[in-house]
Amino acid sequence: MRIISVRKLKDFWTTDAYADSETALGHWIEIVKRSAWDSPSDIKATFGKRVDFVATRGSGSTVAVFDIAGNKYRLIAAIHHLPAHAEKGRVYVLRILTHRQYDQQRWKEEL
Image (cartoon, rainbow, N blue to C red; front, side, top):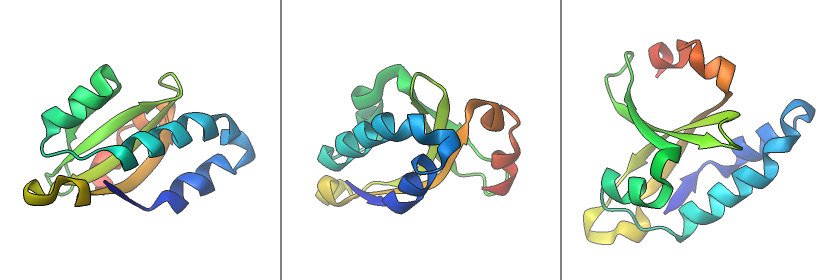
């Protein structure tokens, strides 16, 4: 899978307040890059309880929400599957939030 944009994640972990997320986000990046998902069930098989699928209110689309660093952070991504070429699918990083920011639910309205 191709990640759009890893830069958002690097910008997040290079902020002093979130520097503890670097290892976990780096691990997430490596897993995603090695993956070839055809469906949400493939993503669930890879991440298990560390991923959920949530409907947004703004656009009504469903996004993947990954628990990062022991559930301290939440990474919200849109995943576009290419069934004929699963390895060429795209993972769009939409938000990386603290658990507290995530719980405020504002992101659901914005996406």
